[in-house]
Image (cartoon, rainbow over all chains, first blue to last red; front, side, top):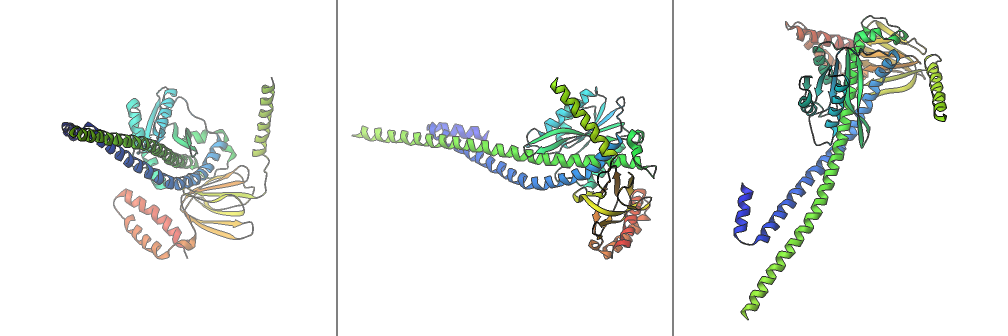
Length: 286
Length: 159
């Protein structure tokens, strides 16, 4: 409304060039502001990236022992039972395709399982994207996490909530695996139930004193996978955000250049026009 | 043809490797990885002996121990290095696994050295938890009992 009114006022004065010049100037200013914002976000993401990567390396080592245990015991999945997919992402956007990639991966997995799957969404973005297509499958969603590198306490609370959904024969944690500063790929961690671990062939390799170790291993394994997944997802997200913001700043820079040239040209044109007006006016007096 | 032959060779070699990894124990030294969710304290480093506080009692683990999985209870973890020096950590809980191949991996939730712990703070926290353990709310009482267990183990360790 306001902008429209301003344009009409400008037009009524008759000097059309002034209006476009003012418009270009306003446009230029807003692009410069956007560039400042994206640039700051990029700097923030770069500083966070180091910390995120450190958290990720620590969680990888933490997860390694669990992974090795599963590798040795080789528990088997029960293909007929229902699968719980825990899709790990976060709340904030402006980080490229990170959320859509993981939801695409989740959709593919649901299709592979012929829809015999329930979904736990971690992060608002992935919840929104998955409820659009699989509203019935999404049983539980968390938000407000993923702002910082994950800690064990919040992961333990989440596992508690997930356990309240009931017993699932198969649990898969889907997350964005951090491969390098410029790339990530959606991957899966498997978590097994106590029954599956007990039935595993390789369990005899281990000498077990206490009976309930399989249930401990199963719960701890889920928490462990979730923590690792979140740490990886967080690192991927930060690095994706840095790249996205870097690109946005570059694009804004290009636009600024173009608009500056355009602005200068139109200003020059206006000046020339005015000069012509003045000179013709002066010469007509002679 | 050539590729097939290559694949067969490759397949054989992995089979050979697998038997090595499970049966022949390569090194005589115990390899310890002690990991916290946010930090790695030991990563595949060779040590002499590790004493663990397990839920089934304390365990001393030397090289060539049979593979086990143990749940840790709050207590003191002792690591004796090759040179005979002892490092102590207080752990709040976690899982210790001796893997086939002479490797010990400990995933603890938290670990601190005993000298990092403030005894006064521990005493205050114990008094606080004892009050809450008598609460009528079951959840609060259960949480407080767990806290007490950790804190009492901690007060034995703290100097």
